[in-house]
Amino acid sequence: GSCGNNASCGASAADKANFTALLAEFHKQLDAVRSGLLLTVAVGAGEDKIAGYDVPGVAKSVDRINLMTYDFFGAWAATGPTAFHSPLKAWSGMPAGSPSNHYYSDYAVQLWKSGGAPASKLQLGIGF
Image (tube, rainbow, N blue to C red):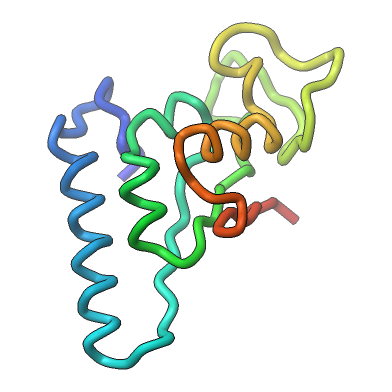
C-alpha cells in the first residue's frame, strides 16, 4: 500500500524487525537452493523512509540495495512542491522544509552509508 514503512500512517512498530527477519530468511533459503543467487531489495531514499529500516540488518542479508531515488516530488502533494524527478544534488531553487530539503540522491546514499550499508551494495534507482 501507499503507507510503506511510515508509522504515521499505520505501519506496525514491528515492521522494521519483521522486514529484516524476512530478508534474512530469504537469504538463508536462497543459499539452500544454490550458492551465488542474488537477493536484492528496493528501498525508500527519503530520510523519513530510511528511518523505517534496520540499515545494517538489511545490508547484511542482501547483495544489492536499490535506492528508489525517484518520485521525491510529485502530483500526490496537492499543494506542491513539485521539482526535479531524481536530483543528484541539492540546488538553489530546491523546495524548502523538512524533509523535502533533503530529497536528493547524494543525501540518500550518504544516509544509507552512514547507517551501515556498504557503498559496494548501493545502487541508484532513477526515473527515466
